[in-house]
Amino acid sequence: MKILVTGGAGYVGSTLVPLLLAEGHRVTVVDSLLHGGEALLGVWANPAFEFVRGDVRDHGQVRALLPGVDAVVHLAAIVGDPACARDPELSRAVNLESSLALIEESRKAGVSRFIFASTCSNYGRMTDPTSYVDEDSELSPVSLYAETKVAIEKTLLQSASHNGGWCPTPLRFATVFGVSNRMRFDLTVNEFTMEMLTKKHLIVFGEQFWRPYIHVRDAARGIAKVLAAPVEKVSGKVFNVGSTDQNFQKQQLVDMIRPHAPDAQVEFVRKQEDPRDYRVCFSRIQQALNFQITRTVAEGIEEVAHLVRSNIICDFSDKRFRN
Image (tube, rainbow, N blue to C red; front, side, top):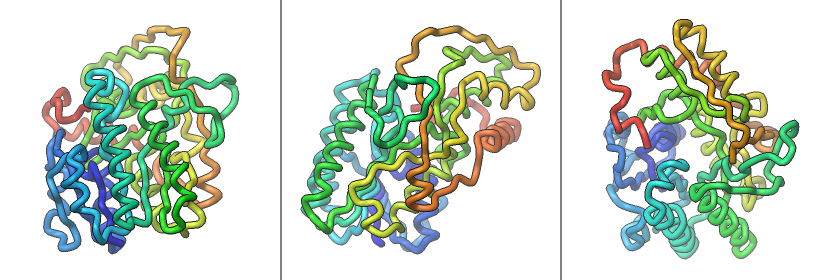
């Protein structure tokens, strides 16, 4: 296929693009390079790769890239609650308005498949902390980031039945971790591991609250799996992307990291309320698409710890490693 990846220089995108190229696809990346473009150097010489520096808010530029495209993987966004809260106007423009425009332009251009990177944060806080939420559970977004994701999901699902050649698929990703070509140290597993090894001190807020986690390579594999699936299996369907056995409390993450940083001091700040507290069931993608993860949180911690100890990265506080 000819695939357009928005945000392809980012944490997930820079892992996805080499995977798609290895599968024989032609890939065009459009990215504003807000966090730099070095992550794409490894694919630069591939004749099936094309890069366009651009902003998804430039609808004319994006429109010009769509003719002949078979699939759009829409990753471009202001990612995460803190980044969105810092600049709500920009976040709405990028995450909501530009996404709506891209959907409309993609349909007009005859794009068949549209994969949208959403988030398990859409579930907010579980009403029953002993249960698991799934794709049919009520959505309770508690941040601007999640609100924009929910709005785009609804638009895509409403559009699915309008045209038989239009195959939209929202993917709700678990919290991502692991080493990527565009590394991030502001994601929970990566951040906890780095701080316990380098600072020997970590402050954890609300250690009892639950989140699901997925390795960045498995997140990319999930996207590739949907792209390869028969249309009837994925059109208008929402999939949680992760593994049910990779739901953990923050306390459990610390316990898994401790063998790598036995001398680290961890300070737990008890919180009785957390707007996000959810355990997620991932059986739908496993049963429908035979998707299985290849790397656990424990293996990801070992991977990140090895990176930290290697001295390849000299300044973990560099803003390039954060959103």
